[in-house]
Image (cartoon, rainbow, N blue to C red; front, top):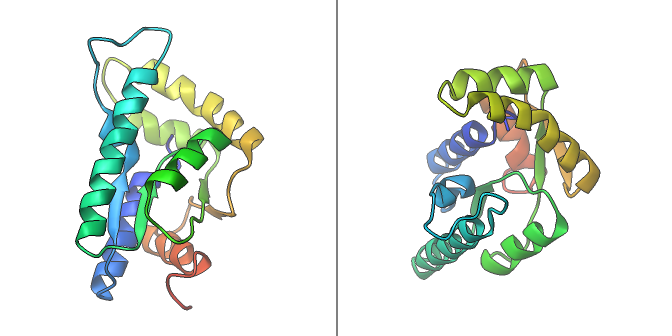
Length: 166
């Protein structure tokens, strides 16, 4: 949270669009924004299941239109989540990029982005999630996303992923 996944996703999509490279850009967290009747306070499983079902539907729709490249923004917390994404997204290969920034920068971004009722919990979650992602170490590469332009970060990600040449 606060590393800049959504912003970099949008910028990478813009770069690809300007180069006429067919792709789909999906903010996975946005596909699960819901409070479902079956939701249990102790478990986010029903919401996660719907989020992944939504991803499956969206990917199928894009694939039916000939899309073969998928940019997906998501904080992947464990190998099971990554495996599920790989099973759902119809891509030949999956490359995981981790965006990094200082804990202070990420907390500040979340504080500015989410000024509402859940702000204290969301800001506190930044450090917890960062530690989880540190331990999981699922990324193929990491890119610093602090004190540099969004375009530079997105371009570097696309080059390292092999989608663009430098």
